[in-house]
Length: 182
Image (cartoon, rainbow, N blue to C red; front, side):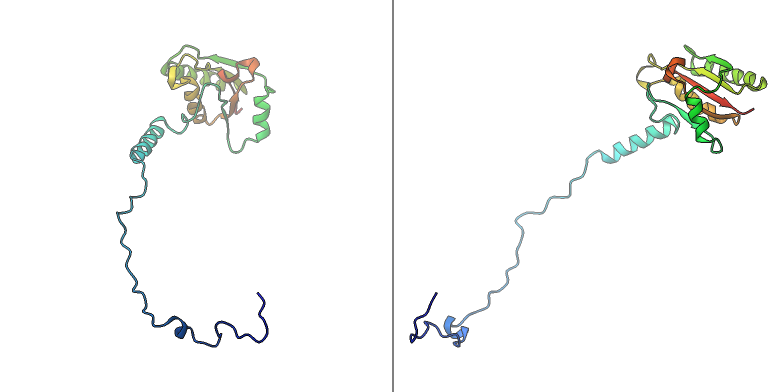
């Protein structure tokens, strides 16, 4: 915007604002009242009951039984056993000296057979054995019973250094190679 020379501006910048606007009154601050109460924060109705049910289930099944499905591989080794030993065991590089087949047995029958088997193989000084537990395909929704039990029972023997799922040629996820102390 250009001004023409000689014409005074419409308003003088030196004029005080109050003189231009006139008398003013400050606006009183009004308190805002919400129309309705804010809703409570969202909360799951059954979250506490669900959390308790999960906790109860996990405690009932025990730590060794959680998360085992039909096709999952098992693996265990003592802290002093090198990882290379476990890898060699998994690859079948140890000679299998004896075998136990637990197919079709109940958990109690399998436990008794396992005790007797372990007593015999330890007495004879065997180094590596195979235990066939089956894949648990007919165990129903609970999953494989003997597989879960063996995963819990075998580490209880101090002479069990390591165990792992056997290769497919020797039973795959339905069998274990167990490495024993001499």
